[in-house]
Length: 126
Image (tube, rainbow, N blue to C red; front, side):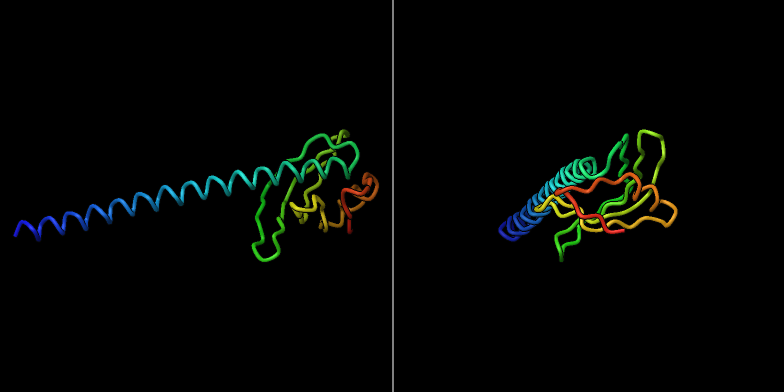
């Protein structure tokens, strides 16, 4: 009887250890994913500042990674030094450090067209 109890205790202990180990692994993986996303957001803001003139502030509203293409879709609120703000989204590739597409509401396209300065850091499509 004691041998049966010992086996059950060992099985329960093993299950608990595996459960705790799995939880720790998942937490570390999520923390790394968040850290990578923050680094990409910072990189993309640098590219925006090199692409557009007179940027005062960039607020990131949402961001997500597309696992299939490896790109990031970022939605921001950008304010220039004249306190004009626009809300738009763009795709960013971490490896090439470029923005490939910009989508903005029709009323904000004039703001983008009059203020943008494209250079070798990005291609702006309006």
